Image 1 (cartoon, rainbow, N blue to C red):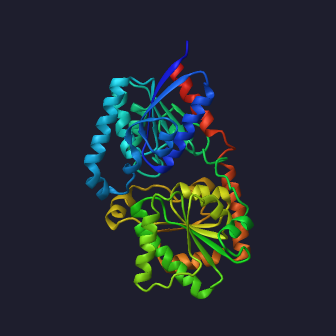
Image 2: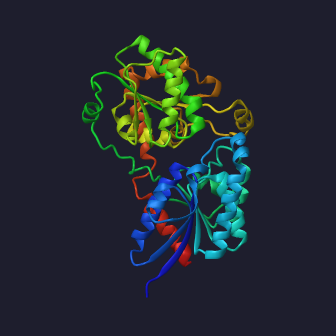
Image 3: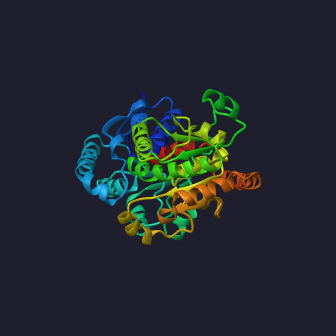
Length: 389
């Protein structure tokens, strides 16, 4: 008789969709004779793995309190649909992937309904809004963390049902093309400097951060017209936003570098070919660190969001790669410090050979702390053990 497992899984952002899809494959690999029935909140990669999308999560990724307020009806509808599906289908386990503002509330509701709840990829409670650790303690049966310091942090706050599985990025950030081949494919001169710009994946990030990046690129080109620029996007989902920002900058008289190219789905190869990069704070700083590209960590949100959130932040670094390293390997330009002048100055500093080599050595040490692969496999095994316990 074929064993059947019903699994509800919910992710809300592009990175969560990616990690959830890998976790689904790992669960199937761990039990190839089991019939898995996955359903929940699914992005395109999860749907391609056969998840029955009660909610298509593509449109749920937004930033900031003001944006959440406008989208509240959408979130409420998604929340209620997922709650109803859980009650009707009675999954063996509910797996919530990142996306804490939504998923912690869902954890509370579904745990109270008697479901076992696993949280994969911990919310960054160690950075801000630490009071939410109470919700994890009460409503999460198993927290799976991907950063090496998180398990100890939870233990210090009285949460023991935590397992560190390693970063799913540790061996999954793969460079497909050597620099020379990548440069040939994109008509770049491999002997001249290359700078990648990573403006984030969300609409609000792109419209706030990319204009400053473009102004910095323009300033650098005026000092050194050999420098080549890439705008590296994880997918083509927000390419229209990028092109709109570029068009607006040009129409306002900004002299853009003649070598500026927009790429999608080639981020790791672009970073590998680059001498340095400007990277929006988030998972991308870990990816750039694993590739080994010296970077500037940048971020800018609305004045209202920053005023509300900044007092809640209680970590020495914004950039994940700096938190892993335990020191400021990459300079951080956040909010008011993030200007075209400060960014261009730091990118030019990182182009200096001695500085570049020293930063690359520090990044390698930090990246080694993330483990050596197998995170999805370990997470899958932990979840299946919980179901059987």
